[in-house]
Each structure stands twice: as C-alpha cells, then as structure tokens.
Length: 324
Length: 116
Image (cartoon, rainbow over all chains, first blue to last red):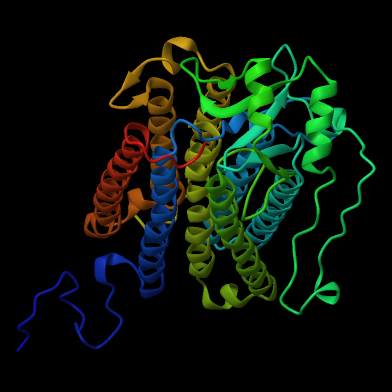
C-alpha cells in the first residue's frame, strides 16, 4: 500500500535512512548553513557597497592604506601581502580537498597529513590577519580632522605622504589625559595623540613646502592636493589629531571604512578561527581512528565544506576591500 | 557523482592552478591599473572593477563546483543552494547600491553638507 513514490522506492520513505537530494543529513544541513552564512556575508558586503556609494567621492584608496610587507619597512608594497594571504588560504583549501579525496579511499595516513597541513595554513592566515590589523590600527602618517568631520593628510611638493612626526613642532604645553580617577567616575577620554593640534599647526607653518591633501578624489582618481594658501586656510579648522584607526575615527579617511574593515575581516577571521578549531577536533578524531572504524570519512567532507566556504568568502572580501 | 570513490587529485591541482593564475592576474591589474580600463566606465563602474568582479565570480565558481564538489551533487540540491543566493544577492546589491548612489547625489546637489 505504498502511496508515495520516491526515487528510493525500495526503502521506506518515513522509516529513516532516506537521503533527500541524494545527500546525507549532515552534508545537507552543512550546505544550508553555508547558504545562510553566505547571505549574512553578502549583507555585510552589500552594506559596505552602500556606504561606499554614499561617499563615493571621498572613500579611501585601498592601495594607499594596505602597503605593508613584513621586513620591508618604509617600502610601499600594496597588494603583495594580501595576495600572499589569499594564496595561503587557497592552498589550505587544496590540502583540505586532498584530505577529503584521501578519505574517500580510506587512506588514514594521507588524511592525517593533509588535514594537518590545512590546520597550519589556517593558523598562518589568522596570524597574517592579526599582523594586518596591527598595521592598520597603528597607522603610519597620522592626519588632522576638521570641525566639519573631514580628514586632512599631509604631503610634500611631489605629493608623497609626510608623517606628523616629521614636521610637528614641540611646544611647551602640557595636556593631561582625563581618566576616571582624576574626574568623576563617568569622565574619561581616549589616549591622547602624540602631538596636539597646535603643534601640528605650528609645524606646518614652519615647513613652507608642505601641502594638505583632502579626501576628495579628483578626475584622475587621485586624492586632491590643495595649494599652500588653501592648505593654511583649511588647517585653521583643525580640531583633532588622528593617529591610526579605531571604530570612531581613522587616519585613512571615511570613518565607516575602518568600521567595515574591522567588522567584515573580523567576522571572517572569526570564521577562520572556528574552522581551525573544528579542523583540529576532526584531526584528532582521524588520529584515534574514529572514521576508520566507521569506514567513512564523511565528517572530513563536512568540515571540508565549511573550510572551502571560508576560502570562498575571503575571495570576495579580497576583491571588495583590496581590489575594487 | 558524490558516492564515487575515484581519486580526483589531477582535477584538484588543475583547479588550484586556475585559481592561482586568476589571483596573480588580479594582483597585477590591481598594481598597474591600466588607464584604458580604469578610466572608462560601464554602468557606473569602471572596466577594471568589472574585470575584478568577473574574475572573482569565476574563482567562486571553481571553489564551489570543484572543491566543494557541487558538480557531483544532484541538480535539485545545486539549485536549492545556489539559486536563492544568486537571486537575493543581486536583489540586495541592486537596491542598496541604488540607494547609496541616491543619497550621494542628495548630499552633492543640495545645500546640506555632510563633511566639509
């Protein structure tokens, strides 16, 4: 009295053991988890796109922000480091898929080695991201924020960036950081910048060949550089010295840029981190022979799906933050 | 087929090669930024950015189809995962980017100044 016809007509439809869409329960759920997570990331990246289109004329240029490479101080090397990170992640994806492939043939030794390499790749990637964050937070040149909230950076005659430390004057002034123990319990302020606004202004006056670069992108897709007179005028509106980046303001330009950078790469980095943890758990399961006893390495395949997804997201983050 | 147990290592290394080449091409274009591509727009986006986006989608295709082995899954699973994603992402991007551009024009053309 079988009224339901399915592809697995030989089995009972409701008795369990059925595989909808020809895929096991675990794999199917992993796919749909990945789908929902992909939509989450799409939402974040679309929000980034929204803010960027909103401030399209003043958005920071990525190749001026991410210019560091390990052991190469003062050399502007845009893209290379992040390309290296991309390779690490793609390669750890390859070792993961090789582990899955070895799992299909029940080769425990090979699965162990490839899974280990995948974990190492993941750790290198997370470490690289931490280094990238460190440089981003520390900043390089420093900038000035005006009363209107726009950001002013300093360049020399040739248009090369000049750091605040290279020209700011030292004035006989003292300004103490306000902390809870010096005021009321709710009174606090962020760490004071190395130079005060007055020191930057005095330093600028003392160096006649310095110019100010605004956030506005001109027709040649470069940031606008003001003339000396305009620069001096603009600098009178200075209110804050900005060094490095945090969630409130950053020396690279639009405040939202740093927020999105921290949030999206942070969320992705957290995914990589959890992926590494899950991979480690599965790695030990492989070592003690759990899947050997089951005669199935499907668990490796499932965490593999997650790991490839992390790589997939990075491909998009890479494009959106560093290329476009 | 997802239950086939033949080794796929050759295909894996081929895909790795493709992904590496695409990444290298992206990085080279990102560094030299050819004038002809960078300065010409198509649908509000310059050609260089179009190139990057297309190459990224090609990379995504290879990761999903080869590494995640989507090509071996049944077509109803493929459609159930990929179709909603593509549809919703295109829809979301369309409304958000249009709105972002609209707000940009409001600030640009009106007397309200956001940032000065």
